[in-house]
Length: 133
Image 1 (cartoon, rainbow, N blue to C red):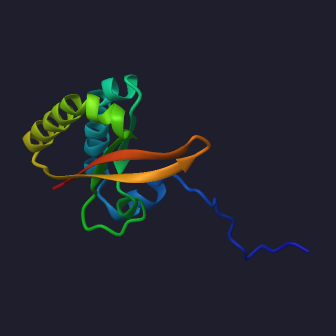
Image 2 (image 1 turned 60 degrees about the vertical axis):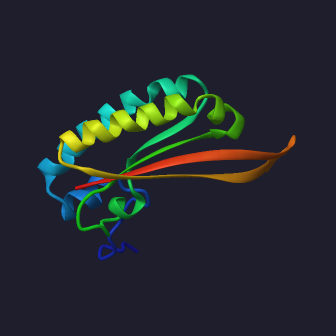
């Protein structure tokens, strides 16, 4: 029996499939370039062992925001972060200057969370920036 009325779909469609239906394609292309530039700005933090994430916010990915928003997150062992805090803040300051020159505003926050692994408890520092028009 052939089910010709059922539509197949991919469970994990690319962001562009959803986002290009909601947001302006030219704006998304401009933001993609900004994201690439920010990834370059935090590259040195990844080189020293910190985990870096740069991309669209989850709510932007599903088309729930009025305008696309970017999230930058740096996290790592609290001790490693404390040794490199000047570099972290310097990277965020460069990102802020760069994005403000493109007409975006930023918000910044940081916190610490505790995780458990095979060696016991570990504190993780998280630094996060939200970028939006």
